[in-house]
Length: 104
Image 1 (cartoon, rainbow, N blue to C red):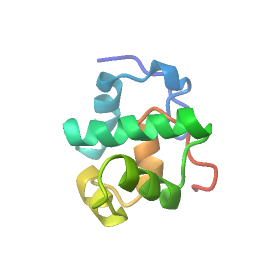
Image 2 (cartoon, one colour):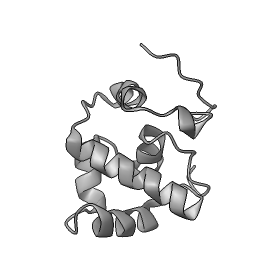
Image 3 (cartoon, one colour):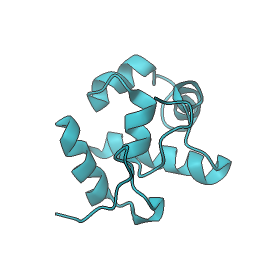
Image 4 (cartoon, one colour):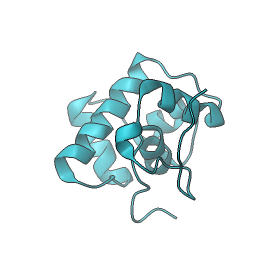
């Protein structure tokens, strides 16, 4: 088990410490076994962060993923596949990114 330094919201303090193993460790809290499909979404999200410099909220997240991963991606599909109702918050957390600024 990795020792992860997390902030008060459960996000990695340093997004560069992210790894697939760290993502799985974080996903265990959601009772979720990550697959290649999950990692394609998380890697796209990390690319978004690198390209735009911020962790996206739900609407830009869905728009970006539908372009970069699969046009069939929707909020409902992500909720189902990631076992959460808080899509942007949990996907950013699993991708090792900060909490989006407008998330509670």
